[in-house]
Length: 517
Ligand code: MAN
Image (cartoon, rainbow, N blue to C red; front, side, top):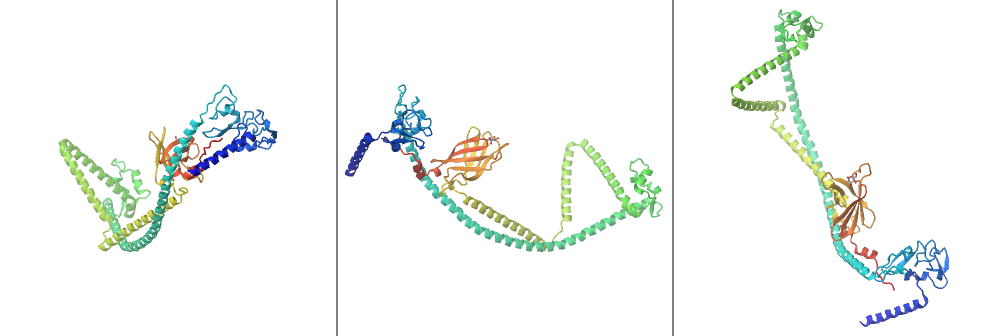
């Protein structure tokens, strides 16, 4: 207590001396702050701040502008267009205003000191009220900063933990990658081995199958020739081993236009320039054609018969018909499945047990190899993702790392904006429609961690690629609070986060309140 009292007495004494001193020898020109008073000496001359001119003290604030460049000789009048007038604003923030605003009829300083010569203008002094409100606002901000920076400290901790976990996972994955590579190589080796066995086993069957196919083809060829010979002999009425033009007139299929006469023209299509057909020529030139004609006729007869039968049944009984149809369908299905199974039987060789086992082993080796490749790819993908995540800059103390993998939305009048920090920004119309990419994570604009850039978004119609700046504000909540498009296809999001609350920085840049005498 005693110490306090003695300090107060000393302070009072010093102030008294100061006031005494100043009142005796120092005159403070109007519009000049105390800190600059030494630049305006009462003795000798005043030199314009830019050094352009020296003038006697009584020309200071004489309403004539001597220092034309900086207006420093007229801080308290509006004589110089570029001078500055200092408002003391005791109780609130002191400040400079352009000296051209002095005595212009508008109260600019909250203490009213800028309108000292205007009788018609009465400026009150509301510095105390304004100062009080400003101090309260500042106190609120400071409290928020304090609270926010506590949260930020927690986020730094969380961020570091997230990164540590990712680093650990990365170590694990690198190990898993080696294992997965080994597994893939092992499975590949096994696959190659079993596939070799499979090929050997199937080659035996292939040879066998080829042989079987050839035999079948040969059988068919012989059967075809026999049929052709049978027909040829029937046509070769005089059995001289050739068919001549008279004999061909009996061969019905050559009556191409079905007028019951085989014309010279029709004969020519078969004989060409030849007079007679040997069996060999008949086989190679006419037999296929005759077979086709027979097949076409047979199918025509079958179709007509079928049609007649169907019509009869229809008039008999509709219900019966339905049943028949069902039966027919079933029969057809049966026949089809029979045919399928026959085809299957025909096309697929019947393997012995050992070959079947080898094929099965090869299939399973292939599938195990595929799984191993897939697994390796998954591990490598995750490694890449984690490395990319770890390579990003999450702030001085990793305070922004907690935003990784999170997304935030904000709706304005037209669009819903979505921000996934360190990933991408998008926009979609409120009334539905497709999403437009407004940029993917780019970088921090400066080292203060206040502004992010998301770049290389979707092309703007007839313009550049879209991009988005995200401005970070200190707040206790994490949320987007504003979204705008300051110029076409360039977007700005305002994003609140406690990670942007650095108490130390707020104090460094904060405004001091001082009441000047
Ligand atoms: C869309 C939106 C707008 C943008 C125009 C440009 O409508 O992405 O933000 O201004 O395209 O054509």
